[in-house]
Amino acid sequence: MNTQTLDDLKFVSEVRKQMDENQLMLSYRGEMSQEIVMALLNLTENKLNQTSFDTSIKTRVFGVMVECLQNITKHSDKGSHERSNVFMIGFSDQGYMIYSGNVIRTEKVDELRNKITRINTMTEEELKDFYKYWIKNEALSGKSGAGLGLIHIARKTGNPLEFDFEQVDNDHYFFSLRTLVDH
Amino acid sequence: MKVINIPATEDTPKVVLDHENKIFEISGRSLPEDVVVFYQPVMEWLDNFENTPIPNMELAIKLEYFNTASSKLILDILLKLEEIYQDGTPLKVIWYFLSSDTDMKEAGEEYSEIVGLPFEITEY
Image (cartoon, rainbow over all chains, first blue to last red; front, side, top):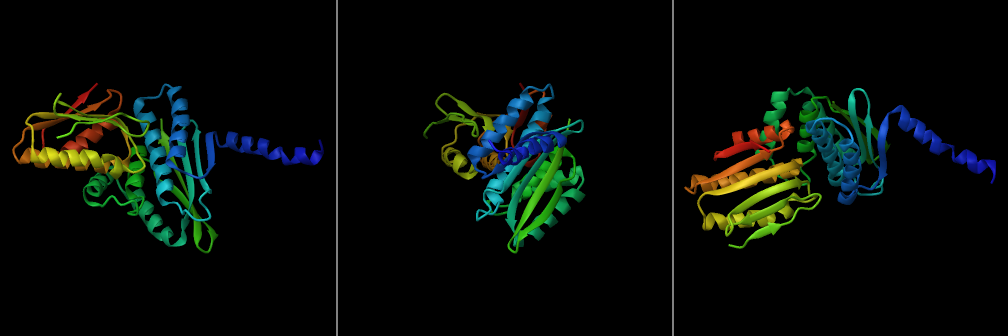
């Protein structure tokens, strides 16, 4: 065994430290399919069921996860970055912090940014009306955008959707989203 | 009219539409990848029901969780029932929620505000 190998292994401990610092209970990076969505949900649900929080809190965490993860299966770029999806969930004094990230095409950035910015300025009542309008009037095409899921997340958490776009290359940006479910 | 009896899976609900035994129920979780495909047989069954309606159907909706994509399909089902009801066939929807789950109660209340048909919201 040489020391080089051991130095290389330091990242394991580094990742653990990073996860501890951010109070993460689950961290995933890779492809996203319905099977993986269900596996991540089952893992988190087992942890949630060990807590004594109300069913509503558990359902909200579950709901935010479903919408974040299914947005990724539906809208992330399926090209060379299909394994670049990220999902993390942390637990702190404030509540459950849910993080997701995926690569999207550059031309979709403005639309998504505008949508989230608009949702973040809406009151609870406006979000409710918007949600009702949406399920009544918008076509349910997989390509109609991540609107309904994002509205649902904003409504159920009552907190702003925090987001960021980081350029990956000319054609792609990495979209990160963070939401807090209070407990 | 054929009987629909779809057992629940981890991401799809149990669906029973059985006019012979008068059991009409959608229960469990609804978060399939493709909601349109999953609910297709239900919509087809409702089209048949519209042509040969049976009075006093009571549809029990007892969902633990549904994703936003399913919320649109649930509305489509309710709107179809509204149409049948308004054409003169008495029917009722009973929306069940777990007593500790206020969000599911609210979801039922929102649907009852959107559709015009007898809509009962009951805790279990």
